[in-house]
Image (cartoon, rainbow, N blue to C red):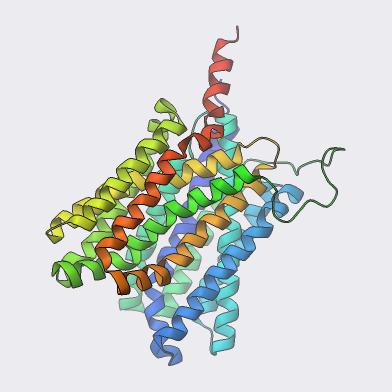
Length: 397
């Protein structure tokens, strides 16, 4: 029998993913404007963006504990509400210290909301006995697309301050519309087997391995986001328009595949899906590294996007279904380690490419996805949904 409460919550959490993506998409065109507004250099801007990232990663340390203590619905509601004024606070900052402070808060609110909405998605998967994680991340990508495109238009015609206020209004509409339909999740009850003061970081080697698999999957994503356009311009002679298509095709292929990903995973299982996805992603990156022409690289990066799309959602689902550890704590750990890949990618890949070139760099990154494919059996916990469904179908009515 269909769980109507979980079905409504499924669309509510989709709205939360879209809201988070919309804010981050709207933030992207605001970044270059910080340079003239605050009269800072690119190096200082890079440090400020690092502050935002560190705020997100550090907050993820505590998000799982908060969810385990207070329940996922409450934590997701609080941090999604707190995210609404975050972008205007950054845009209206009048000094470098206040800008740094609000960027750290912005990152922390987005990071905690990220963990909470992924934990909510895992709970809904359990209630519905089917995968929804990949399409939930697809809604994030969709929100990012609308936030970035509409945000750029609003800045051009209305100004950055007005854009930030419109972003807050749209985010508020999505959040307030979704909050009443979120799945109620009770706090984790203390038992005689549960330590009164649990460790801040879980002592589960398998969980940390999942985190590093997510890290290996996110670094190539950051490499295409930050460096593909420069690679096409410097080494393949692309103009500004064609070089920008590299990430556009990558992101478009990723969004399409994320919406198809749940059906693929429900049919073939998480382990097989991750193994094939890793190999497809690796082949795409290697194709980009070996491409003789820019259009070959663009198509190769699109193929890589098809592969990478569902890898991280599967890992989040596997973490949330891991036995012996609260779901939210497991997800926060994997999310924290995985998102370090986004932080590490820009600087480290730039350094490697400067010394060895972009072709060897992208070829090397393809090997990271091969490693993930070889470790695909580690996400078997994500297939618990299929086992539960099969057992439920086998029971007599």
